[in-house]
Length: 243
Image 1 (cartoon, rainbow, N blue to C red):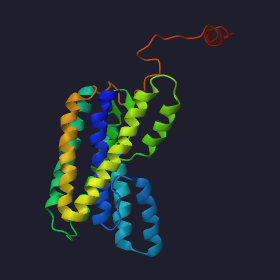
Image 2 (cartoon, rainbow, N blue to C red):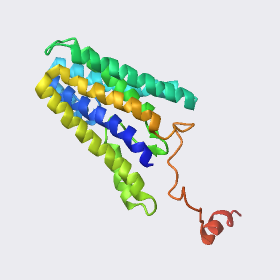
Image 3 (cartoon, rainbow, N blue to C red):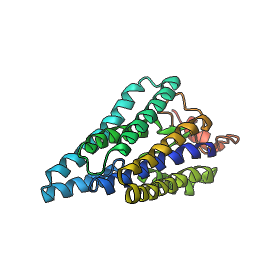
Image 4 (cartoon, rainbow, N blue to C red):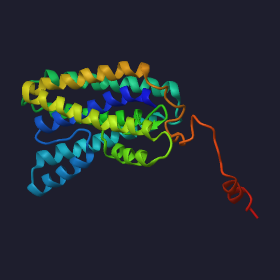
């Protein structure tokens, strides 16, 4: 499980940096955090700001479309296709981030690239939803924090899972801090920080646990890596009372 941390770290750091840059440079728009965007979308409706309504609503739609595209491409799921898809997602993400970093501050056409980037982040979350035997989110961390709490209460191997999910929160915060600094110091050029994190994520794929044969395969039970012990009374209750 610990081998999943570097890749998960860089992927969540990418999302944190992009969210910070998008929020600070595009008037309060999250690119990966759709919960926050939905709240801001409702606020835009209340204020009657049509430009923000279109941008924030478009980001939510683009993120959803990215998730749908990945799920369609991975049916039926196949490990070789998943590996290629992950590399394609990171390659597209790097290209869009590079284009954004080259735009002068205040250029309106950056909004279209932000929509494309939201779709790619949705695709990232779908393509990397499972690293080894760990299921997680890499574009937002609310679900990861929930799983962190669940891991803490598990009896066996809980610290391994907890370490992974705690790392996702640390990574998102680290990326958000880096993105905020980039937006303050370099404006649009700050997107190059996220591009560097994408390169790091692509490199870390080589050292991450191999992807599962199916992206829908569940987390392994807590007894993986140790002997399976089923209490006799459990066997009796499950298999001895069929009639």
